[in-house]
Image (cartoon, rainbow, N blue to C red; front, top):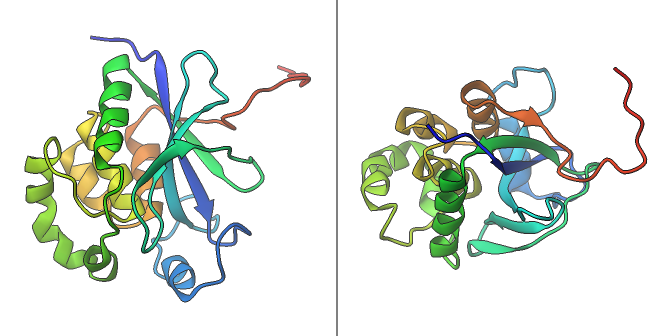
Length: 194
């Protein structure tokens, strides 16, 4: 079995993030979020970050915003605005996840799934069968969940729940992966005491 030597970073915005527009959809995402396990406010947006192997502070982010297209481009994240989960991954898992996102680049936003997630349950089998071949519409949690499933990081059952809301993604990764909290940045000039 291959040893994880890479990481994929899930990057989240919480409901009160200053980076979020004060928009009805963001307020609804917070209101209808599942209860958090840690008592904190829910996350309402998620993206994936693929750190560069030789410079972990740089890399590319993959995600989608309401009404937009799936993007994959260099991005900087600030610890004050984002919450991170680092997911240990093998080289194969990392490559499969990144290549999947590269194939989906430019895909449209999944309006039907966003507004009627229960109806999308009918599409889970279709998505599973066509992940390797078709460009499909997405909303943020759906994109992240299916990317991680395609890479072999989470299974199909976990994906069915995780895709429904960014908080479900957070919980699924926390409960099913050997994650560690990560600032995804360097610790320069920091003294650590044990």
